[in-house]
Length: 188
Image 1: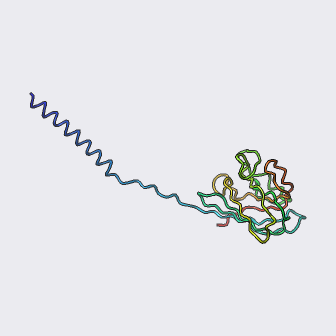
Image 2: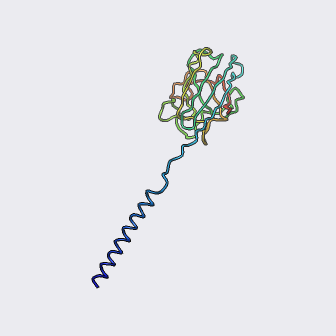
Image 3: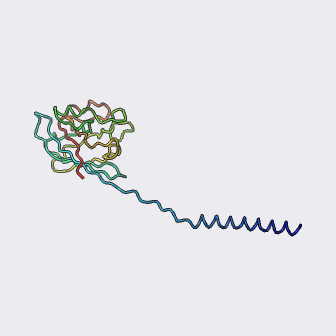
């Protein structure tokens, strides 16, 4: 009887060791999981501003580009604007006839209050001001972390409006009337 207990205990211990070793072998023998890099996309768009009927001749180009994991970069080179700081916003609609009034209000899918580009609360379309005194000799670059060429709130097909005055970044009507506008068109 004593030998039977010793043999049974020995079998149980051997089985336990076998299960442990086998389990470790499966655990350490599995293929190493290496995360696959996300594919990086680049989207490019353009916008060609036109004067709000009856105003001065305005021409130029606004280029927009964004890599899927980066901020939106906007480069503008426009001639014919007054040489001062001018409100620069993305508006809700891409229709830019009717003296730019068809562009609607600032693009604001989140229902936020008006603010500046660095404000905690702001419209997605609140890009602040551009320094038009640099045109036509120097391009102006804006980098924005809220507006995007990607996703459900993409600004492609919307419009950029350049206003007559400086945006005070507090009051939405501070930038004055609409001087020029254009539709954002994907080009890549």
